[in-house]
Length: 398
Image (cartoon, rainbow, N blue to C red; front, side):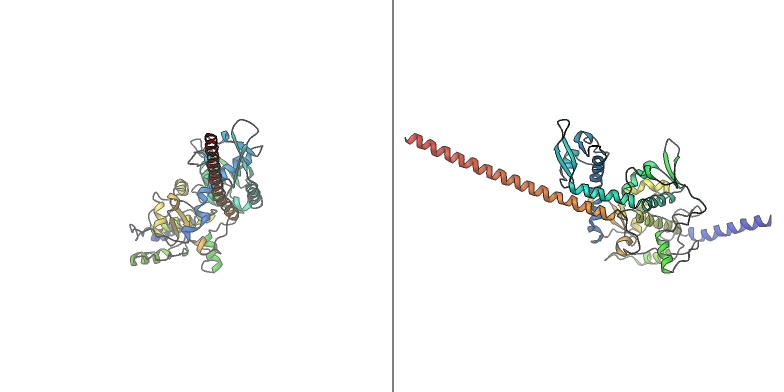
């Protein structure tokens, strides 16, 4: 009985110690003006990723076909599904460096296949999926383990495949640590099976702190979140004072339960910042459209106004407004490239972007050739008219 009372007392004491941090909320409604960052706003691999996504989706359709080519009828009505805002045929013709149009063996329709350069890149991409399968599955595992119940609906994971750098058929090749589960309301999900032999999962922030010797791995131990101020961004004194206190708060890993954290407290907010930091560190470009992350809110236990966290922490995240959308970028990944491992698919994505850029040159050359052809044809007709007029005059005079 005494042992049970002691255990209850110890648990209550731990809860009270936690609450000393969670009940404080000294920074609530301070407006943070968005600041441009010329470096982060100019990174092609981030901002061209939105354009590249539907191109890769169409490429995958062609590769999946038995003949290695498809008629336009196969994809003409799937523009919405593929995130293509215009007619699919017109979209395909915008990228002649990737897609080659020809008269197919069947039907009186345009057919499309990959250019030789695109075939080479696709082979390189598939090699990454094969050679780095364990690392890619580890990123998926970490995303699932950040969820409240250690499971995510398949439809949510499907929406994250592009950011995680997973192939469309990722379900067919998962190892035994993953398990398909029912999540209610007809939803199927994916969970991670954990055993006592599994090693503790450290976040990127924890690993870097352990490496630098400022963290020993204890619970409720303070770790400062890496900050990277943008040029010209000046914070008010009261925000700087709050930020100093915020950095001294305990760091709660996104892989640990946080049931005792009071919603809206500074400590709960620090955990949310740490979770978003970890989430972006898993992605190919360490960035994502902010609106695309909102579908994770319910399953990761994020607050209703999680989008505000990006605005309140401009030293951690940069919000870019290019491409008529809002992209959240993890600053540490680009200002300290040794702290976060590059995604194995990152190099291939950059090569795809460079290949796509060649389409503009091809289309420009085609326009110049057509213009030259029309100009020469016009001169030819003009010369014919002059000859006809000369002949007519000769006939009249004779």
